[in-house]
Image 1 (cartoon, one colour):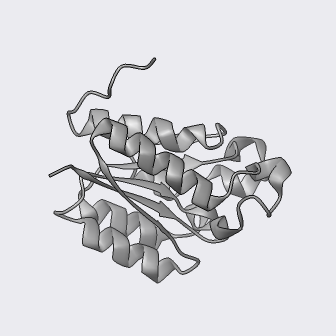
Image 2: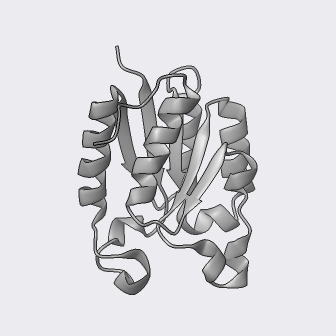
Length: 152
């Protein structure tokens, strides 16, 4: 049985490839999902990939991860800067989490410089586009005590 990694995506990420491609790139969420699942497979991880525009649904997925998932990768979108509830859910899950953002939130509007999610995450990756998700998988692999395969 492979360790499960939950990959959660918040509001508006379903519009990737269409919404502000100069900021978020042209990759679609479906493309990112395929890439992350393939990378997870190469690491011996089972990836469960979800997206929701609803905070409560994201919280439910985090709650369900407790005792079941080995790690969580979360791009909470705008909820990053507003949701104490997501932060509390991540803390309560006791599952190591990595926060990911496609854009560099520190080069953007000042309100994006604060992250509630970061207070519950083992690490934050931002500004590296889709590569951030892959690096987060590698980080989770290390956090759960399994070395990633060598890079080619």
